[in-house]
Length: 128
Image 1 (spheres, one colour):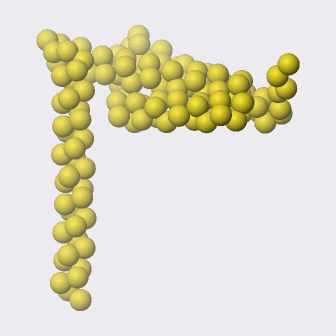
Image 2: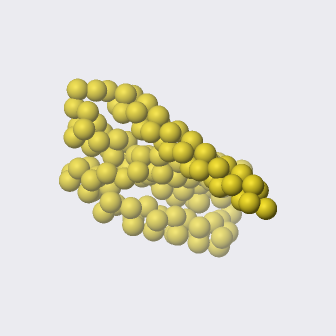
């Protein structure tokens, strides 16, 4: 018989509450066309799945299930947000096209921030 620790129960309750708190947002994304940042939702989902694997390695099985529930909710938020963007902005395109477009814009934004930071560092060096 598997012994359940109080830590496993506490983590499970907290993670299930996280998933429950996401349900109104999920309803808005599915039925009202709301949009979350796709990359934030996707990264949160992937990291949550990794956390579920960590719980599994610790044999915290209930925690793993609760964390997998949270990860799946975030994945649904990412998917339906992406679908809503496609339906409103790119109705003739595939979801893959929208992901590629989002990724391109994200890379350009990161490059802009990095270039600005590097320029700022070098301008301070020149002044000294």
